[in-house]
Amino acid sequence: MEEPAAGREFASPKGERSVSELWFPSTMSSPCAPPIRSPPIIAASSSSSATPNKSPFVSRFVTPLASPMRKAVTSMQGYLEEIGHFTKLDPQEAWLPITESRNGNSWYAAFHTLSSGIGFQALVLPLAFTTLGWIWGIVCLSLGFAWQLYTLWLLIQLHESESGMRYSRYLRLAITAFGEKLGKLLVLFPTMYLSGGTCVTLIMMGGGTMKMFYQLICDDNVCHEMQITTVEWYLIFTCSALLLAQLPNLNSIAGVSLVGAVTAVGYCTLVWVLSLTRTRPAGITYHRLDADFSLDGVFGVLNGLGIIAFCFRGHNLVLEIQGTMPSSAKHPSRVPMWRGVKTAYSIILMCLFPVAITGYWAFGTLIPADGGMLSALYKYHKQDTSKALLGASSLLVVISCLTSYQIYAMPALDNFELRYTSNMNKPCPVWLRSGIRVFFGFLTFFIAVALPMLKSLAGLIGGIALPVTLAYPSFMWIILRKPRKYSGSWILNWALGCAGMVLSILLVTASIWSIVTKGIEGHFFKPK
Image 1 (cartoon, one colour):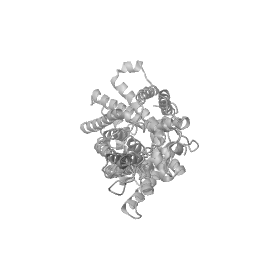
Image 2 (cartoon, one colour; image 1 turned 90 degrees about the vertical axis):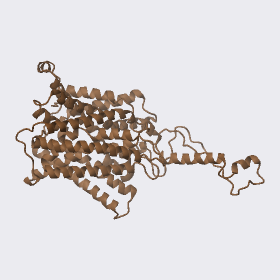
Image 3 (cartoon, helix red, strand yellow; image 1 turned 45 degrees about the horizontal axis):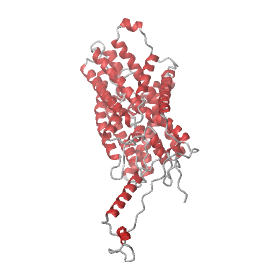
Image 4 (cartoon, helix red, strand yellow; image 1 turned 60 degrees about the vertical axis):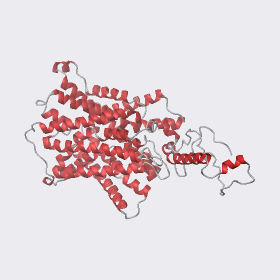
């Protein structure tokens, strides 16, 4: 039999295909080392005594299982079977930034989850209460938190299949569940938007907060002489983010994610404490959900639900984070991953709820729609709050945006490198990897400058991306794990999946209605 040549693609199990094959069916060759072959196993004799016709040398290899050689061979066979069961991976994955390093742990998972789970969207969470009111605002926020935590658990369990395949990318899991064409149709745009679109929004938020921080600490005369435009602040933020983006892979930014997690918790805590301890502005009103049953009121409620749903994003990164962990039959990666997620979401719970409740109590319906809590502090408490505290809150937001940019950019950067490695059959050189990251950074900068009205379309695109968080995980669980029909798991996942799709349709409809009735300001290349 012909020996496999070096560089020939690893033979995947029946029905499973490599990463490159899923993305680019026309390119079928990806280099790898020849498949690992287990050493030949020498069968032991069924009799306790050696066969008389065999020589003493041969009889040493057919002794019972207590033989040291037999133990060694059996242990090696079990080891190879265990490794083979949980490493049925395309060797190309060792070249890509998400799966290049697999020495992650539960702490790394907690850092990444915190950095991606708490962000600027927490500052606008009180806006949901302005349309939902006190009771329904708290109820919807609690239900949304429990819902997305459950679908997060589903994804963690689905990361490793019974056949031993690991799905370290959301798109690959969706293709396995829904099929290649339908999986790409349903998931490709939402996941790429959640990666690239979030990076664009982070540039807008981080650059705008940099401008606020500069105007706060700078003397008026100096600010007048050295006027720095919003575009220039966007550029400063992008260049700072690109310096951090030169770290090679997802595991290498664990320290960056830790800094992002600490700063996110810091500014959330600082914002709600300042709101609670300062005198509330005059003329505060609180919305009652039963006060308006008009069409505008209904769509306002849906927009409030959209804000809560937008706050719970990050599911497109869960499988990628889990893909950085080692895994074996005895120690599957889902155990430390779930431990890290539980730790992270306990902290997220203690941040989001105080910001939402305290922010609505302090400002009511007066909270600004653009900027949320941070803008409210500058607008109503700039005179009775020290510059140090306001400046610290702004600086923490900027640092958090810089660190969140790194983890949200990873799926897009991974996709760029996948195209190169699939076509060239070799890993990206260092200079090309740096060039890809610079290109992506300035692409997101260009979109932030050219289309500043994207913030007005966040509800529309967020509604399209909502099933990634609340619907698709339930459907994928039903398809891949096949729970017994009409069982509790079957009913629950069908109900949540259908409810997520209906909610997505309603949010998209509400966003389109808002755009048609109120319009959007199309100031191209003129960010404010």
